[in-house]
Length: 257
Image (cartoon, rainbow, N blue to C red):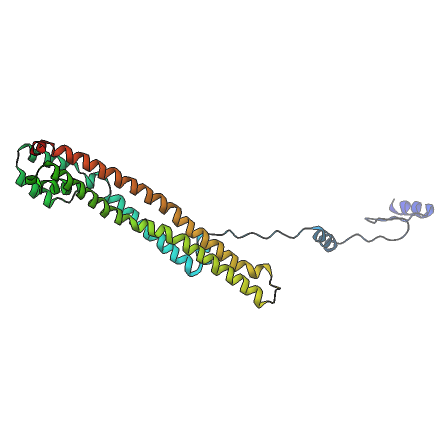
């Protein structure tokens, strides 16, 4: 049967083929896998560069020496703020215990004990009342005058304690301005050394430093001014409150006019 089949194909002039592709107009070669990969690579876009995020550490390093000085001022500002927050408050300057003790001693008319207690106690209320008791023999008006003077003196002492905050708040932006000038000088120096053909990347370092120091100075100055204003108002309120309480405590001596 196989021979008969072959004879039939031979008589008809047809040559059997297996797994072949015949095309008119000549042989056509199929594209290879490497050619396909090369073609796909030609049309592909280059991968975008990953932008590095700027960290706080990068900003501090960019500020240079002036930037680190501003950072040191910020640490000092935080330390002073914590110390003032602990001491400039009603429980420290006008403690209820001291007020009640003075009141009880005055009700008992034990002026010697009042003077002794006020001399040992460190609260404003005790110092103000103690100043008044020192003028007990000269009359009530002298007592009030002495108490007012002592209140002003205690307020001045407290104001001197917050002067450091004002000083830091004023110095920080000035240092930032100094850093700005230094950074711009570096940028223009780069232009001069390149004979006016400096690349933007070469100028960026000086300008970057100028902007960073400015920002650091403002970051320290703005909170510092807010802290100073808060403690200034706190001192005014506490001293005024102490003066009112002190006058109420010594009011029984009003008959000594």
